[in-house]
Length: 72
Image (cartoon, rainbow, N blue to C red; front, side, top):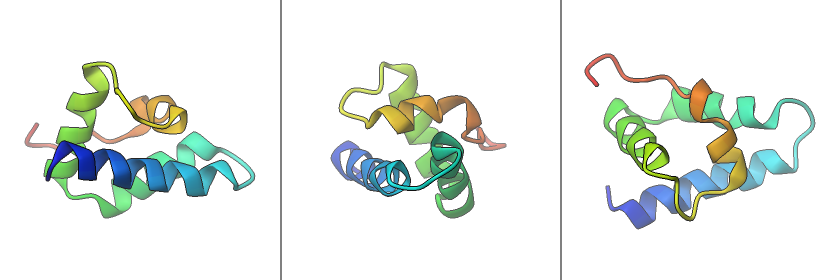
């Protein structure tokens, strides 16, 4: 997936959860863990590890809650 598309998708998820009550970062991570395939999560985690440029603050906050794929 292109980095721009990945960033857009992650930011859309974070924008939704930003308007929800409760654990917003947990919601972002749960959605990504449930619906993103391992390659997408690997790509997102690599982007986060390199600074997470252009990612919504909730995506950055959710970093440690996003499951590392087994094959990573």
